[in-house]
Length: 254
Image (tube, rainbow, N blue to C red; front, side, top):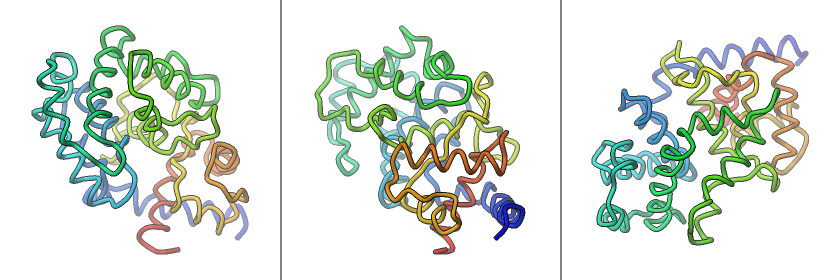
Protein backbone atom coordinates (compact mmCIF):
# COMPACT_ATOMS: atom_id res chain seq x y z
CA UNK A 1 0.00 0.00 0.00
CA UNK A 2 1.04 3.57 -0.61
CA UNK A 3 1.12 5.93 2.38
CA UNK A 4 -2.20 7.45 1.22
CA UNK A 5 -3.79 3.99 0.87
CA UNK A 6 -2.49 2.92 4.27
CA UNK A 7 -3.88 6.05 5.90
CA UNK A 8 -7.27 5.54 4.23
CA UNK A 9 -7.35 1.90 5.34
CA UNK A 10 -6.37 2.64 8.94
CA UNK A 11 -8.64 5.68 9.23
CA UNK A 12 -11.57 3.46 8.25
CA UNK A 13 -10.59 0.94 10.93
CA UNK A 14 -10.35 3.73 13.53
CA UNK A 15 -13.94 4.73 12.72
CA UNK A 16 -15.00 1.11 13.07
CA UNK A 17 -13.34 0.42 16.43
CA UNK A 18 -13.27 3.84 18.13
CA UNK A 19 -16.90 3.32 19.07
CA UNK A 20 -18.81 2.66 22.34
CA UNK A 21 -19.49 -0.94 21.28
CA UNK A 22 -15.72 -1.42 21.69
CA UNK A 23 -16.28 -1.06 25.46
CA UNK A 24 -18.47 -4.17 25.70
CA UNK A 25 -15.43 -6.45 25.78
CA UNK A 26 -12.74 -4.01 26.88
CA UNK A 27 -11.36 -3.21 30.35
CA UNK A 28 -12.01 0.48 29.62
CA UNK A 29 -15.62 -0.23 30.59
CA UNK A 30 -14.55 -0.18 34.29
CA UNK A 31 -13.75 3.56 34.62
CA UNK A 32 -16.86 4.30 32.54
CA UNK A 33 -18.89 3.17 35.56
CA UNK A 34 -17.84 6.34 37.42
CA UNK A 35 -18.59 10.05 37.01
CA UNK A 36 -16.26 11.83 39.47
CA UNK A 37 -12.90 12.74 37.90
CA UNK A 38 -10.78 11.16 40.64
CA UNK A 39 -12.84 7.96 40.65
CA UNK A 40 -12.34 7.68 36.88
CA UNK A 41 -8.59 8.31 37.15
CA UNK A 42 -7.99 5.84 39.95
CA UNK A 43 -10.21 3.09 38.55
CA UNK A 44 -8.59 3.57 35.13
CA UNK A 45 -5.07 3.44 36.56
CA UNK A 46 -5.75 0.29 38.59
CA UNK A 47 -7.53 -1.34 35.65
CA UNK A 48 -4.68 -0.51 33.27
CA UNK A 49 -2.20 -1.91 35.80
CA UNK A 50 -3.70 -5.41 35.49
CA UNK A 51 -4.47 -5.16 31.76
CA UNK A 52 -2.51 -8.13 30.53
CA UNK A 53 -3.71 -11.60 29.69
CA UNK A 54 -7.27 -12.70 28.99
CA UNK A 55 -9.55 -9.68 28.61
CA UNK A 56 -12.50 -11.35 30.34
CA UNK A 57 -10.25 -12.11 33.30
CA UNK A 58 -8.97 -8.52 33.33
CA UNK A 59 -12.54 -7.16 33.40
CA UNK A 60 -13.59 -9.58 36.14
CA UNK A 61 -10.58 -8.77 38.31
CA UNK A 62 -10.79 -5.02 37.70
CA UNK A 63 -14.43 -5.23 38.80
CA UNK A 64 -13.28 -7.15 41.88
CA UNK A 65 -10.75 -4.42 42.68
CA UNK A 66 -13.51 -1.82 42.67
CA UNK A 67 -15.77 -4.00 44.81
CA UNK A 68 -13.01 -4.40 47.41
CA UNK A 69 -12.80 -0.60 47.50
CA UNK A 70 -16.55 -0.25 48.02
CA UNK A 71 -16.95 1.06 44.45
CA UNK A 72 -15.69 4.42 45.75
CA UNK A 73 -12.04 4.26 44.70
CA UNK A 74 -11.08 7.88 45.45
CA UNK A 75 -12.69 7.86 48.88
CA UNK A 76 -11.05 4.50 49.64
CA UNK A 77 -7.62 5.76 48.54
CA UNK A 78 -7.86 8.94 50.59
CA UNK A 79 -9.48 7.55 53.76
CA UNK A 80 -8.50 3.88 54.05
CA UNK A 81 -7.38 2.32 57.33
CA UNK A 82 -4.87 -0.47 57.88
CA UNK A 83 -7.84 -2.84 58.28
CA UNK A 84 -9.14 -1.72 54.88
CA UNK A 85 -5.78 -2.58 53.31
CA UNK A 86 -5.90 -6.02 54.93
CA UNK A 87 -9.23 -6.64 53.18
CA UNK A 88 -7.40 -6.28 49.86
CA UNK A 89 -4.99 -9.12 50.66
CA UNK A 90 -6.96 -11.93 48.91
CA UNK A 91 -6.84 -10.11 45.58
CA UNK A 92 -4.81 -11.67 42.77
CA UNK A 93 -4.48 -11.14 39.04
CA UNK A 94 -1.67 -13.23 37.62
CA UNK A 95 1.47 -11.91 39.38
CA UNK A 96 -0.26 -8.80 40.80
CA UNK A 97 -1.50 -9.65 44.30
CA UNK A 98 -2.98 -8.10 47.42
CA UNK A 99 0.42 -6.89 48.64
CA UNK A 100 0.86 -4.99 45.39
CA UNK A 101 -2.68 -3.61 45.44
CA UNK A 102 -2.26 -2.46 49.04
CA UNK A 103 0.90 -0.56 48.12
CA UNK A 104 -0.76 0.95 45.04
CA UNK A 105 -3.59 2.31 47.22
CA UNK A 106 -1.11 3.73 49.75
CA UNK A 107 1.02 5.27 47.02
CA UNK A 108 -2.00 6.77 45.25
CA UNK A 109 -2.96 8.44 48.52
CA UNK A 110 0.54 9.96 48.62
CA UNK A 111 0.25 11.06 44.98
CA UNK A 112 -3.05 12.85 45.66
CA UNK A 113 -2.05 14.30 49.04
CA UNK A 114 1.50 15.38 48.29
CA UNK A 115 1.80 15.66 44.50
CA UNK A 116 -1.63 17.10 43.56
CA UNK A 117 -2.85 13.89 41.92
CA UNK A 118 -2.15 11.74 38.88
CA UNK A 119 -2.91 14.46 36.34
CA UNK A 120 -0.53 16.93 37.98
CA UNK A 121 2.37 14.48 38.00
CA UNK A 122 2.08 13.53 34.34
CA UNK A 123 1.37 17.09 33.24
CA UNK A 124 4.34 18.55 35.13
CA UNK A 125 6.86 16.11 33.70
CA UNK A 126 5.84 15.95 30.04
CA UNK A 127 8.33 17.18 27.45
CA UNK A 128 7.54 19.16 24.32
CA UNK A 129 6.99 16.04 22.20
CA UNK A 130 6.70 12.99 24.50
CA UNK A 131 5.10 11.54 27.61
CA UNK A 132 7.79 8.87 28.10
CA UNK A 133 9.99 10.96 30.47
CA UNK A 134 6.86 11.70 32.51
CA UNK A 135 6.20 7.96 32.87
CA UNK A 136 9.72 7.44 34.22
CA UNK A 137 9.32 10.33 36.68
CA UNK A 138 5.94 8.98 37.72
CA UNK A 139 7.47 5.60 38.57
CA UNK A 140 10.12 7.33 40.68
CA UNK A 141 7.49 9.26 42.66
CA UNK A 142 5.16 6.27 42.88
CA UNK A 143 7.78 4.21 44.68
CA UNK A 144 9.11 6.89 47.02
CA UNK A 145 7.37 5.21 50.00
CA UNK A 146 8.65 2.00 51.63
CA UNK A 147 7.61 -0.98 49.51
CA UNK A 148 8.46 -4.54 48.58
CA UNK A 149 10.78 -4.76 45.58
CA UNK A 150 8.39 -7.24 43.91
CA UNK A 151 5.81 -4.47 43.43
CA UNK A 152 8.07 -2.30 41.26
CA UNK A 153 7.68 -4.58 38.26
CA UNK A 154 4.04 -3.54 37.96
CA UNK A 155 4.94 -0.01 36.82
CA UNK A 156 7.06 0.14 33.67
CA UNK A 157 9.94 2.53 33.01
CA UNK A 158 10.70 3.69 29.44
CA UNK A 159 14.20 4.73 30.60
CA UNK A 160 14.89 1.04 31.21
CA UNK A 161 13.77 0.01 27.73
CA UNK A 162 10.10 -0.74 28.35
CA UNK A 163 7.35 0.10 25.87
CA UNK A 164 5.21 0.84 28.98
CA UNK A 165 2.09 -0.44 27.25
CA UNK A 166 -0.25 -0.20 30.21
CA UNK A 167 0.64 3.34 31.26
CA UNK A 168 0.55 4.55 27.66
CA UNK A 169 -2.92 3.03 27.43
CA UNK A 170 -3.96 4.76 30.68
CA UNK A 171 -2.70 8.08 29.28
CA UNK A 172 -4.67 7.52 26.09
CA UNK A 173 -7.82 7.00 28.17
CA UNK A 174 -7.24 10.20 30.16
CA UNK A 175 -6.06 12.53 27.37
CA UNK A 176 -7.80 11.69 24.09
CA UNK A 177 -11.11 13.49 23.63
CA UNK A 178 -14.38 11.80 24.55
CA UNK A 179 -16.27 12.77 21.38
CA UNK A 180 -16.87 9.11 20.52
CA UNK A 181 -17.67 8.07 24.09
CA UNK A 182 -14.63 5.80 24.37
CA UNK A 183 -11.72 7.77 25.87
CA UNK A 184 -12.33 10.41 28.56
CA UNK A 185 -10.48 13.61 27.60
CA UNK A 186 -10.23 14.55 31.28
CA UNK A 187 -6.69 15.91 31.21
CA UNK A 188 -6.67 19.16 29.25
CA UNK A 189 -3.02 20.24 29.55
CA UNK A 190 -1.47 17.31 27.70
CA UNK A 191 -1.55 17.42 23.91
CA UNK A 192 -2.76 14.13 22.34
CA UNK A 193 0.05 14.59 19.81
CA UNK A 194 2.49 13.58 22.57
CA UNK A 195 0.83 10.25 23.33
CA UNK A 196 2.41 6.93 22.40
CA UNK A 197 0.61 3.85 21.13
CA UNK A 198 0.07 1.08 23.70
CA UNK A 199 2.38 -1.46 22.06
CA UNK A 200 1.54 -5.10 22.70
CA UNK A 201 1.68 -8.41 20.83
CA UNK A 202 -1.42 -7.61 18.74
CA UNK A 203 -0.63 -4.03 17.75
CA UNK A 204 3.03 -4.89 17.23
CA UNK A 205 2.33 -7.80 14.89
CA UNK A 206 -0.17 -5.80 12.83
CA UNK A 207 2.21 -2.82 12.67
CA UNK A 208 4.94 -5.08 11.30
CA UNK A 209 2.63 -6.54 8.63
CA UNK A 210 1.71 -2.98 7.59
CA UNK A 211 5.42 -1.99 7.56
CA UNK A 212 4.90 0.59 10.31
CA UNK A 213 7.42 -1.26 12.46
CA UNK A 214 10.58 -3.19 11.66
CA UNK A 215 12.03 -3.86 15.09
CA UNK A 216 11.20 -7.36 16.33
CA UNK A 217 11.01 -6.68 20.10
CA UNK A 218 8.10 -4.75 21.61
CA UNK A 219 10.31 -2.39 23.61
CA UNK A 220 10.99 1.35 23.97
CA UNK A 221 12.96 1.49 20.70
CA UNK A 222 10.09 -0.19 18.84
CA UNK A 223 7.65 2.27 20.40
CA UNK A 224 9.76 5.19 19.17
CA UNK A 225 9.76 3.75 15.66
CA UNK A 226 6.01 3.12 15.69
CA UNK A 227 5.29 6.59 17.11
CA UNK A 228 7.33 8.19 14.34
CA UNK A 229 5.41 6.35 11.63
CA UNK A 230 1.95 6.89 13.15
CA UNK A 231 2.67 10.62 13.46
CA UNK A 232 3.29 10.68 9.72
CA UNK A 233 -0.31 9.50 9.29
CA UNK A 234 -1.79 11.91 11.87
CA UNK A 235 0.53 14.30 13.70
CA UNK A 236 -2.21 15.66 15.98
CA UNK A 237 -3.73 12.37 17.17
CA UNK A 238 -1.40 9.47 16.33
CA UNK A 239 -2.72 7.19 19.07
CA UNK A 240 -6.15 6.96 17.47
CA UNK A 241 -4.51 4.22 15.39
CA UNK A 242 -4.28 2.07 18.51
CA UNK A 243 -7.92 1.15 17.82
CA UNK A 244 -7.11 0.13 14.25
CA UNK A 245 -4.01 -1.92 15.09
CA UNK A 246 -5.61 -3.60 18.09
CA UNK A 247 -8.90 -4.28 16.30
CA UNK A 248 -7.19 -5.74 13.26
CA UNK A 249 -5.12 -8.03 15.47
CA UNK A 250 -7.69 -9.16 18.04
CA UNK A 251 -10.95 -9.17 16.10
CA UNK A 252 -9.80 -9.76 12.52
CA UNK A 253 -6.70 -11.92 13.13
CA UNK A 254 -5.01 -9.73 10.51
